[in-house]
Length: 132
Image 1: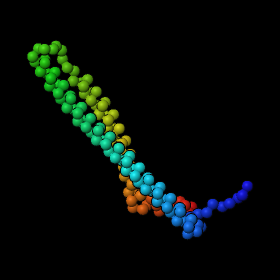
Image 2: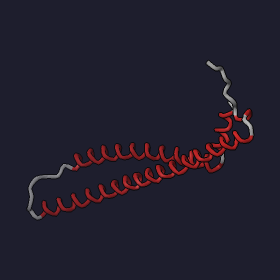
Image 3: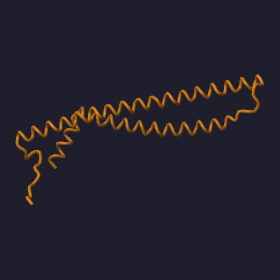
Image 4: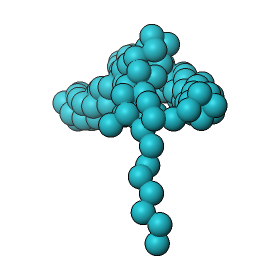
């Protein structure tokens, strides 16, 4: 078995460095585009959650309004137990907020990665690792 030492970036000749630089730049361009795509997908999902939460609130207001109207007109009997609605809404709210926090963290991580690529920090980090 041949026991060859792996070269660090600094040990490469000019042509080898050019190839490595090109591949690194292609990888960073790919990552940049991929991160932006996923960040936009996460942003869309966050917007959907916010719309869902508003819609849920509007539905509850309508529900109580219609239910009260029907009770007043003696078209239905019984009482509406608002506490059950409150428990359900609180559970939904806690679940959706938890999911929103997770999505916001994911979006923040994409933002950080995108900024690192755009600022050149990611490339410098890779070059540093290549010389390790």
